[in-house]
Length: 155
Image 1 (cartoon, one colour):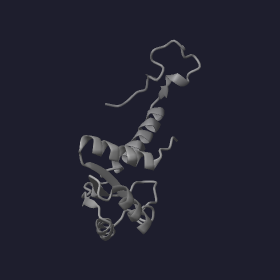
Image 2: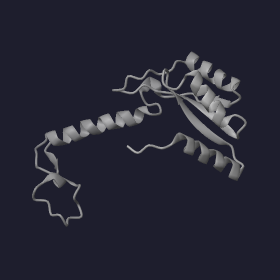
Image 3: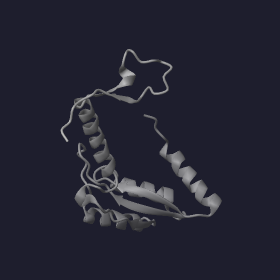
């Protein structure tokens, strides 16, 4: 996985803001125990205090197969107050859809899980990926298509 230097990203964001005389919004996803410490508040203050920046504080949403806890409302408000005390402009964005596991970040998890189920079901129904076939024509334009093996269904 390719990594990016956060300092260069911040520098680019601030440069853009200054060049275009526009306020930039930074989305900050709060994850308890990971990025909610006093050192995080100080760093954000160093980067964005007295800059044309709005911190949009987002609440992490639980996803399947991940054991990171979602911050509660009190943790979110407390972190917001600490950021404001550090001289930052902060808004909290209300997360919606968590009660039905359709909030930001959760749909990707749900989609990935459904794709796994769909791919598994396709194999069970007789679909197979032609690109894995030894008889594949290397000049074929349709290397990643699926071919269907006949099967009977009741209507």
